[in-house]
Amino acid sequence: MLYNLLVPLSEDISFLNLFRYLTFRTGGAVMTALVISFILGPAVIAWLKKKQREGQPIRTDGPESHIITKQGTPTMGGVLILLALSISTLLWANLSNPYVWIVLWVTIGFGLIGFSDDYLKLTRRSHKGLPGRFKLLGQVLIAGIATAAIIKISPPDLETALAVPFLKDVLLNLGIGFAVVSIFVMVGASNAVNLTDGLDGLAIVPVMIVAACFALIAYLVGNTVFSNYLQIHYVAGTGELAVFCGALVGASLGFLWFNAPPAMVFMGDTGSLSCGGALGGIAVITKHELVLAIIGGLFVLETVSVIVQVASFKLTGRRVFRMAPLHHHFEQKGWKEPTIVIRFWIIAMILALAGLSTLKLR
Image 1 (cartoon, helix red, strand yellow):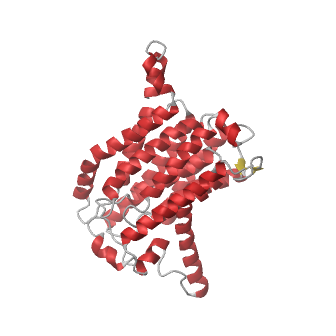
Image 2 (tube, helix red, strand yellow):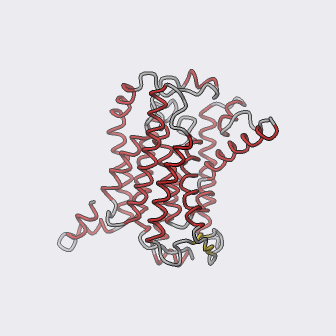
Image 3 (tube, one colour):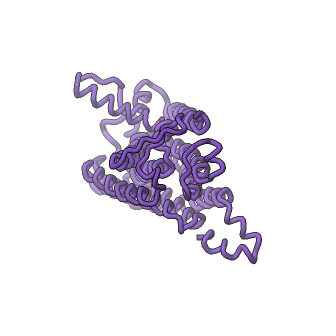
């Protein structure tokens, strides 16, 4: 909004030229989302506690310690993330850029699905919320609409193409199959973040790390000079998503203030589904779908651990891990929660650096 309002005035007021620069507006988005989180956080948490007297329902099939340590902690903290993220993005982004609206559509749409799931869990006092098939159907529908919009406005040579990391000239033209891949990336990323969100602060820091990486990627992909130098595929207009990513970094950092161990609030499906969906949408738009699997490798590991556990138990009757997702396995082995969280953060950072290396290794 500030871009659209103030840039036309920059010819008369030279100071307003600052709002033309993506780096300035991305920094502004980070700080704005952070400040909004700090200001609204206590009020949002107080409201959630008032509405959720008993807090989030704790799974009886999860770690026994959670029944004691997590009892009474409110959920739906993703509302705070969505508020800070949306307000900051609308304030600092160029609102004439269609990519901004596509990512907001996915973020808020997935957030509403997560909100419905959290609400049903609370009202029923059960960890079973929205039926899985309805949740998945809603995600596929939202991601499908976003995919159709992305294909429509993408460059003709890239609209249904999948870029391969490490290979500069390789584009796999998937045709209609690209829609399937795109939907899978958004829905998969959303649910992967959701599976990771099981310990205080565990999911939000990797979300912040991945968002920061994609802020850089979006900026580079949307810049002809840098994209040519790095030999990555140029997509006009994607640089504006750096502002959105900056807002997500700020909102995540602000939420971490309240979610750090011991958590005052959980993000719930409201936050995890929306954050994951947003990252998936940005990866599709910037043509870095496969790189997301590297940068967000921690989410992939958590998801694979669940798939392996379920498959092994159904096929052989035996479990590979003591408990899935992976972070619960280490809890069962006796690791303390802060130890697991910090070590997983370290892994997330290492994988993010590995993913960023694909920008140069071509």
